[in-house]
Length: 198
Image 1 (cartoon, one colour):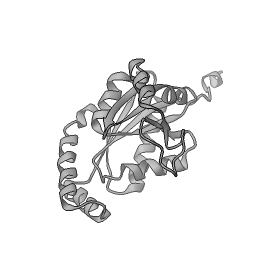
Image 2 (cartoon, helix red, strand yellow; image 1 turned 180 degrees about the horizontal axis):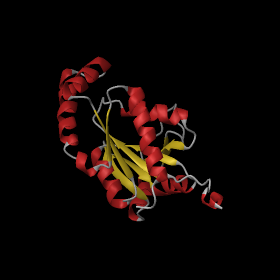
Image 3 (cartoon, helix red, strand yellow; image 1 turned 180 degrees about the vertical axis):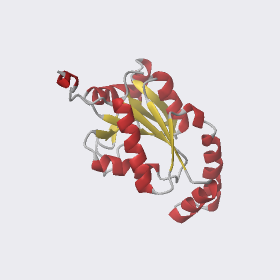
Image 4 (cartoon, helix red, strand yellow; image 1 turned 90 degrees about the vertical axis):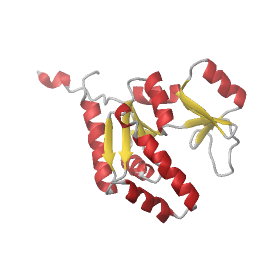
């Protein structure tokens, strides 16, 4: 008789992933997306011009500043920011439609954006990715070879400020080994899917 409880409808949700620059959160998310069809990246909207290799609806939703401002006005964004004169934000409809389809939507974003999302959509699950320690984070940033010393120091200062917001998050993962971190992310997703309504 219990078979009626075994509905196959998977529960979708929004997973917000933050962490200092260089901590490896992008790598973890990329592996999760590659290996799971029911996990998708949240596609951001932006008012900046499309670059030659980019696709509308894949890399970003490219819209005009006027359209973006209309979305802000109509509260159609979970969060947004203006960076170097261009708007960037997370369209609510894309996220909510994906969740309704049973997908886990991953939004990789900084702490400020994550706190905006939490305020506008309290059902979001927030995960903070930490380095084993700050020395290791600095080593990873230097090893990347993409930033000069001044930028590395700036990123380190930002990292220390970001960690102060850890208590705003639901989960934290220390990214020492990528494979372990991916398994921990999968465990969080499994736990959230099994949760009875908050």
